[in-house]
Image (cartoon, rainbow, N blue to C red; front, side, top):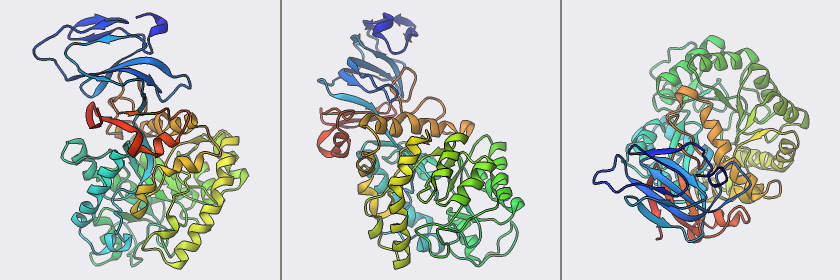
Length: 453
């Protein structure tokens, strides 16, 4: 394989046989892992602006074995001739709440429903996401850990789930669904706070020592990283958008407790004071930020903090359980989207692609590409939704359930999560949005989820 003909320069070994540019895998009765060869495709690898023309990708088991500009011959492989279509990494949504089904009321789910009711509503959500080409999600709060494991085991169709598990939040904050709480780490059995904890949704914690306990409790229950409610929210009623969830010392306690378990903290925050306290405390990721000033956005860029999911969800004003106050707050947040997105690009903030389009909004997930189009090229947006979000997964280090390989890229050794479009999404992002007509192949974990061939 010549240097110009290969994306990955290492020789590939399959069954002990090394091969180069025109690679031939000898026929064998029992291959070590299933082989799939996708040939005659234009490849967007998730990282580079330049596309790989007339490319081929060989998949062995769950992983990509080779990416080449020249033909790969693999007689044992299942053959897919892409016919010149565009191959991309699977999409990654960095902000989902998959356990919120279209008719799920968060207050009811947290305080009165069984976790099974919530899970039954989430299963169709998982199927819908992968059918759109979303092969991985970062779930930013809710009892999605076991759902993710069921998907990984092949029991349910859906995306990979990197789950935060329980929210960690303060009394009267965005994670406070009830409000009746006894002080300290031990919750009264009859309290709303205890029901929120046992249902897998939320842990209330006040003061640095209580915050450490909450973070450790979430991690003990399987959280891959920690979601902290750092300020007021739209979908709740007690907390104004201007409210600040925690002191700097409380944020720092969360960051330190997460770091002790080799992972990180992502925070829900809109306003300047919340975000500036987070920056000083070493929080890695701000997931909203719609009401920030230019000064705070510049501080984020300087600190290297992620703005992982600044979004403008289509349908936010029509969420069924919203009150008039929820809709007022939603309108205020939406009004800040364009200004903050422009500043984020100006100051070089690390930007992911996340939608927060849960509940009744799930069908609109891909419209976030449309919302970002005034600020970014199709290629820039695709990078955000693939390789950039793959980097977000890696922030969880040893807590990342998918750390065995890279996500969001098409390169040797990466997870074999790929999409094949009849059209070129790097020129027209509408190709991704119109997935029902343009998406011809979905592969996740090396397995074909959907094929029109």
